[in-house]
Amino acid sequence: MADKPAEAWLVGRLLATTAAFLAGKGSSTPRLDAELLLARVLKMSKVQLYVNFERAMTQAELGEYRELVRRRAGHEPVAYILGHKEFYGLQFKTTPAALIPRPETEHLVDEALRLAKELWPGLPELAAADIGCGSGAIALALAKNLPQARITAVDISPEALALAQENAASLSLAERIDFRLGSLLEPTNGQKFHLICANLPYIPTAEMPGLMPEVGQHEPHLALDGGPEGLGPIEALLAQAPPQLHPRAHILLEIWPDSLPALEKAAAARSFTVLDTIRDLAGHNRIAILTARA
Image (tube, rainbow, N blue to C red; front, side, top):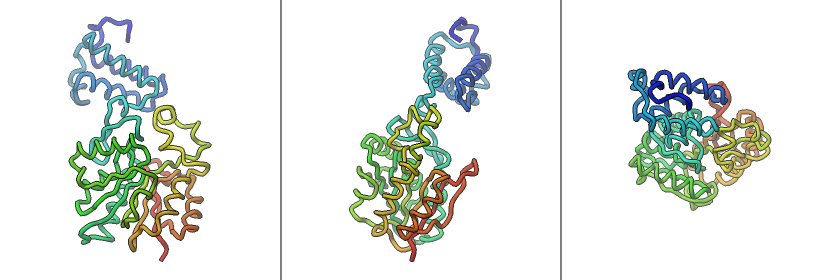
């Protein structure tokens, strides 16, 4: 790409060449990556790129695109390069301060919305918590779709919490969410919840070296490493939760699939029952739904 004059690089050829280059660098979605990055440079949609396949790139555009492709070739996630990611139909600002919102976590939101509708359909104010809120993806998706909910969002990282607050402001949802800095339920001052949602660090420590470079080298380890069984923060949450639950309250957790048997034991030890698990698109147990034993 760098050896060709600007006039030789038409959009269609540039996309094909870049996709092949990124594939060689280990990208699992090389064509999509090439399209998203070029769309950013040209300020076009993906559809517009295809309408403009014969458009010639300028030297300035090529220079900007080369820099973005260089970053992607170094395994920097596209969401961090672009600075945004869609989650549950909402646009989130993304920075290395927090995990990138993922499609798997949308299953957790689906289940939270289902439970709210089934268990508390007429409740004037539903108390929900997003513990370890990161960019605010779960909290804001719930706020957007549950107008009766009052949501508390907690994170131990000041940088992540600031990012969540920025996303809340940009989505005009800031007044619906109470942001708290601290560990798990400690900063919630003993308030009670109907729903507790948590995408806490759940990757077993031994699995950390095997993560894809996009994750292991760029996303915050504080939000990834869940201890020996991937249950350290989750068990701590379950220990704190009982006095802060309304009757029929549910806890929804994103988990490491292989940790499910250990989670069931840990939950039972804290007088919780794993009612159900939800599989992600790859068929792995990804969301666990818990409730306190009567």
